[in-house]
Amino acid sequence: MTAQSFDRSIKIAPSILAADFADFGREIQAVEAHGADWIHVDVMDGHFVPNLTFGPAMCKAIRPHIKTVMDVHLMIAPVDPYIDAFADAGADILSAHVEAGPHIHRTLQAIRGAGMKAGVALNPGTPAESVEYLLDMVDLICVMTVNPGFGGQKFIHSQIDKVKELRAMIGDRPIHIEIDGGIDPTTAPLMTAAGADALVAGSAVFKGGSVINPVPYGENIRAIRAAAEAAR
Ligand code: DX5
Ligand code: ZN
Image (cartoon, rainbow, N blue to C red):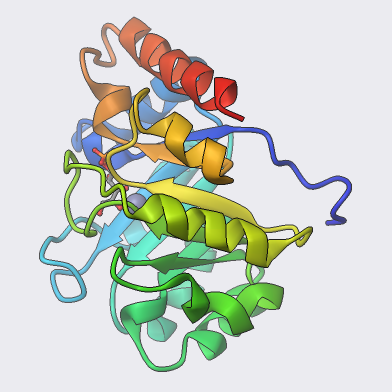
């Protein structure tokens, strides 16, 4: 992808961590019908983070329901033994944490080698410089604005400066800056003003709605998008 054609528009990526776990297919269809740009899929192993969700088999099962982009966020360690399974599951973007092991460079090579876009995620305590020598091998940098593991946590404001630093480091490289954790219409504009273009939101998208009554999903997505776009 050339820098000219790179899509820096605001993307809203609902996290299915906040959806009905017994009904992922219809939840995905509902948020996509109501404005979602990507679907964010949180994979947790109970080891890298203190929570468990699901693995590649579940990702493969929900893949046919996703018409947009399957954005898979791995909160697992190790990562490398599972990369081919997530490629086979149909992930478009596969993000691994820089803290997940000593060889993130090799991991990112393997993700691209398996035909996916490569993302690198940073915990709140990890500095922007940790990805400085990875910029030519990533398609996305995910800045965690909560400590990973759970939805519904409070946004960590210190990450605004990290996003500004990353935005400057990236220059005109075709790299998305994604924000994950505590995003709502109040916090989204802080991050798009700082340089982010992709916003993950779990609780703030799914609150008040259901597959039976998905209209609030659309209202929630529009409210986040409007606030995010106004701040650019
Ligand atoms: C946290 C996950 C997030 C989470 C965001 O570990 O990576 O994607 O679902 O949830 P909210 O938007 O509720 O903070
Ligand atoms: Zn996530």
